[in-house]
Image 1 (tube, rainbow, N blue to C red):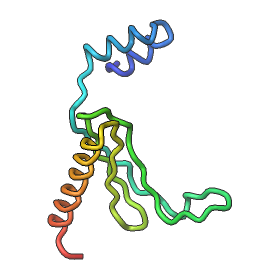
Image 2: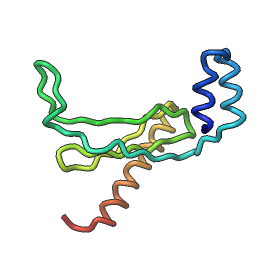
Image 3: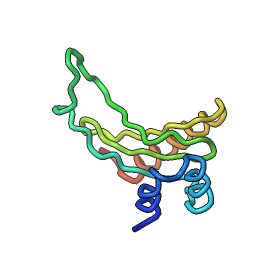
Image 4: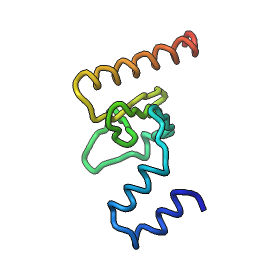
Length: 112
């Protein structure tokens, strides 16, 4: 049983503050993390009465300086996204990281 399973099992019995303290001391969080949210199937994504032209999925909100780069695809295109809680300067840094990552991926993939 890993950390998350143990904490899940204890959650009904411990106060939220106690769980938060355990997490803060015992579980490390990387400053930059990555997640692949997968391919979004445009034919299956429907909302009654709405025409969906684009779709962006983002991972969990991270408070700066933490950052999570999320990757998904929509109608054959790669989508990079991030959700950040930060100052305008921090948001600009996150946007710059996304642009730099997109440029690096484009250079790596080569011409279409």
